Length: 234
Length: 234
DNA sequence: ACCTGAACACCGTTCAAGT
DNA sequence: ACCTGAACACCGTTCAAGT
Image 1 (cartoon, rainbow over the protein chains, first blue to last red):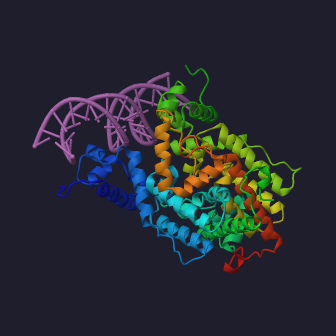
Image 2 (image 1 turned 60 degrees about the vertical axis):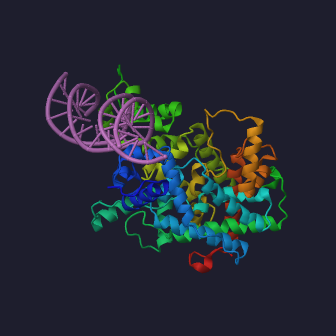
Image 3 (image 1 turned 180 degrees about the vertical axis):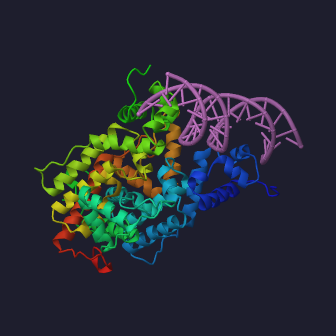
């Protein structure tokens, strides 16, 4: 019984709530309509199509990002901003997939990108260098970096016996020695199952700092505003 | 008329051909079956479900990557390998989306990751540093980096008049001044439409070199094998 | 062993109609 | 202005049956 009239914001909030509860794949126009006690077609008065619904959901996330902190120096400020985006993305497990699937640039997305870009400019970087840095940051401006070693947690998988684990590890070690070695280093030898998760938070900060430090070094070297081949980091 | 019997490879090749022709969204079990002159259910003898079909398609791409060139030094070798992955991804426009949507790690994917990891190890990097670098590279090991400024080419959009372009640019400049400034720098002022494409090839190389140079610097500084907070790049 | 036919339980979206 | 009902053209996947 929808005593309250539908509007765009109610639709988006309900979609976010549904995704939080049941994952992004559960967000269908029909299921969302049911949540709102309304017929599917009613939604189309408030979002043009499903893509616009997903765009709107990402906009809701961006609204949760903390604004820039003017008290911090440039590097700390960008770090703080991106880590705040990260916290939001971690609160909404569906966010990564949703962000990666988006192709349209809403005004909210553009405003966020403009703001991060402006932080580099305010730090004194040239427009050209800033452009390259934004590309180098890539998805990290959303608070995440692409998963490489992360295990897709297989919820309803049967637990392995110790013998099965050992056999699996032995085969893995033989076929993918470098991955195993690196995973051992990442987990200090505590592999509970092959492909155990690593500290993704640390990895995020590591890559971020590597890029920001590289930026500082290039800037200090009087990076020219031309982006020809000679401008490559030596 | 399927005179030739179906097998996994024929299924995957047909799926890749279909995606090349009509995009990844056109790859449905039903459409693929029709291409093969077969009923949809026949496919399920060769792939477990649609996810496994997509995994298989990515494996086909990886098989097109060039093997490592042992004549090159480590940095050039990794650069060469990732640029070869990049050429494959560019040949198949659907590849980015497909790769980003994958969550399972097939043996082919693991073998590729193992090989790239091994190149860092062969260069003398510690397992720990190698782990962080793989994370920092992220999607770049697939030959692409996340799109930020790229325009989703709107194929059937009506061309804008000069007046419309000017008005749009003026509004854009007011709302997103930093993005515009940076886009101007990237295109040397030749903006044919707001959000004109930049040289993504250059951006890929830029980020790659920034990360590889950072790696070299950390390695030279006797990067410890511990990954505690003190190990952050200063 | 491999393929088929019919069915199930879903999708996003259109259109014309209701209030 | 906002919501509804019925319909269209699709999906992935199951099951039991054919050859």
